[in-house]
Image 1 (cartoon, helix red, strand yellow):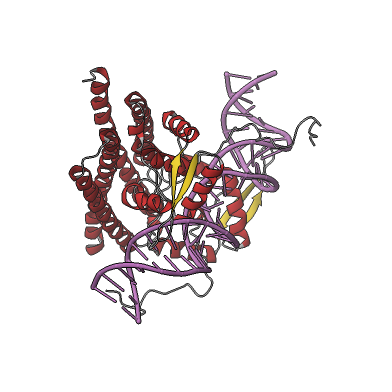
Image 2 (cartoon, helix red, strand yellow):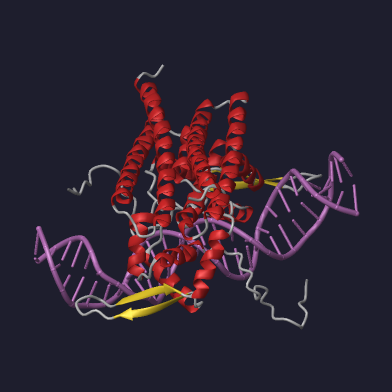
Length: 204
Length: 204
DNA sequence: TCCATCATGTAAGGTGTTACATGATTGC
DNA sequence: GCAATCATGTAACACCTTACATGATGGA
């Protein structure tokens, strides 16, 4: 059954270690791993490329940058600008790079997923079919919007060849993954809408 | 500097406008809407039927029940048992039912999604393909497990006809939705694994 | 003997969201 | 004049996770 396999895989839980996940910290390290950025740049990266898989508000970004800075995982340099607010550009330190590499190599922990749409739909048997139908139609709109964003992202990747194609490769894979799941959800949603519309229009 | 006028309390959240989402509160109301349950029963319902869409630990369930009780949305009754710990059975009040109906009718708010696997994969261009391949293979295992659970759930629904078929109907729809997205993810994952294995085994 | 099941909770701390605060420049 | 963009942050609180705490019964 279970072996105490202490041979490989460094156990780095020295003593009272941090059980926390700190995903946002690593995402920011990951972004800075590609190029130095300001908090503002990072927020833009979220909005343009990451928001479908993870998102964070400005407040979280700036406080996390500060804390990364205090942990010496990043350093900042202020670029003075005249007709714009100054830019505080962050870059990885060697320790930051090591942290990032460690996280990237680490297994992804299983974690509770949360889906507000599905969990509400789960209980829709307690209310009128008309309301559930409306939820499904709204969800369909949302999925179509997200798919449009995925198409936009696809074109971005296709038209703008990068200096570092390996980075792009995985970003395109993630996009493809997300698009596939969105399409699968859309199919189920549209079938459910069709079924419900029949039921609502011709109650037996 | 802004001074507040002497007229009111400084508490600006006084008039019941809660910006909070409180999803777990509503999920528990939704479960109690079907039948009275104890905290333990609710945890079991999560583990058996809800965990794929939302999950919560015991501690959160019990504290939420307490707070729902204080808000008079549920009431509890202790059922004394001799050879087992006593059961504290909760049921909806009229106010609780009204809250639940209101939430069910409300539009689902768009919210940041979080996917730890995809966000890590996004950055995998910064490390070796071998590591990314391992992540994809582990993810594949995870998806297969989840799909097996979905199949188990399908059989549960198929074999156990319910007194309230409308509740079941939507639960089956949610299951179908989740299964479809898992399958779509699995396909993309397996294609990526095949591509990477070729690349790793025959580096150009 | 050991483990799973039944059954209910508290305490601490980490994570995430909303609201607030500032202020110059560019384009309509 | 008005809005958007650029640019950086703080405060308060809501939400979620982990660890801790207890203890009887029944089966392998």
